[in-house]
Image (cartoon, rainbow, N blue to C red):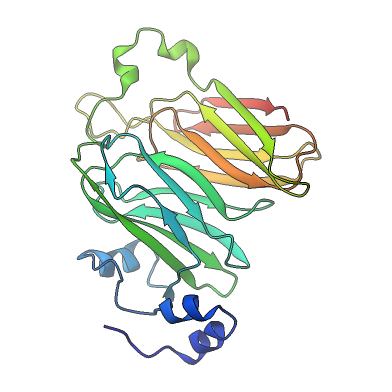
Length: 256
C-alpha cells in the first residue's frame, strides 16, 4: 500500500528522475518483512526513513553458500551520504557493517554470512538525519552464522592472521577501484566453544593521508573478508590499517 509523501519528501522527489521519484516511499516496507517495524526502531533508532531506489543492494536472489554471500552496496546516486549501515532482518546478529565514505563514493562490495532467507538492507544517512533505505531478499538454505569457520580446521591460520593483500586499478582518468583482502576467521560466537572473534574497524587513506573510507565490521561479515570500493584517480598507494576485537592490529600498503 502506498502512502502520501510528506512535504519534505515531495520536495526531494522533484529533484529525482521520474522513475526514482515514483518508487520513493516513506512507509510500507517494499520487501514486506515481518521484522521491518522492529528494524526501524532497534537498528535505525526510530529516525525518519525513506525507501529510496537510489540506494541499491546487489546480491543473488538465491545463495548456495550461506557463509559467503556476495553483496554490493551502491548509493553513489544519492548525494551527501554521511554513513551507510548494512543489516539483515532475520540474522541472529542483525548488523553486518557500517561504513563512512569520507573520501570515496558510497559504494562497497563484500561478503556476508546469512543464517536463513532474509532481506539484506542498506540504510544511507544524509546530513538531514534521514535514512534512505534500499534492499533485496536473499533466499538461502541457511546456517551461515552457526557453522564453524574454515580456520577451525587449520593448524597454521594464526600465522596468517590479519595478513593483507590487495590491488587497485583505474576505471578512467578520474576514477579507480580498490580491493582489499584480510585473513581473519570472523567467528560469530554462535558456535559452541568458539568465542566471537572478528575485525572491528578498517581504515583506508590515500598517499597524502586523506581518508577514503572507514568501515566498522561485525560478526556476520564473511570469513577472510574482501572489500571493494571506489576512489578518485589512482595516484599512489592506498594505506590500510585496522584492528579486531582481540586488539590485533594490521597495517598494509596497496600499490597502484
